Amino acid sequence: MTYTTTQLDALKRALGSGERRVTFGDKTVEYRSVEELQAAIRTVEAELARNAGESPTRQIRVTTSKGF
View 1 (cartoon, rainbow, N blue to C red):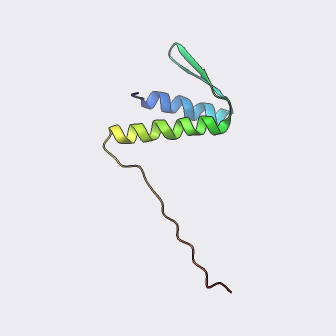
View 2: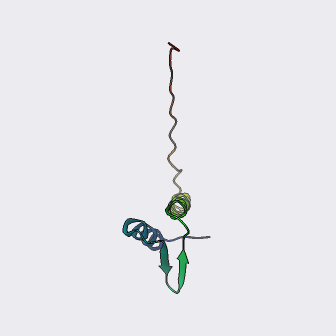
């Protein structure tokens, strides 16, 4: 599915205001939880980055210990 920045903005506005219901034009989606809304935001951001030819940012964290 192709997403738009307008849809991403609507998702972020809903998250910022504490809403779980988002309207895109004539369609309304109600998310069950904040985590589900955040997952939708990540999905749209990744798709927009992919369409723009960018690769998603990845982090690698390394932790070490001497075992004492």
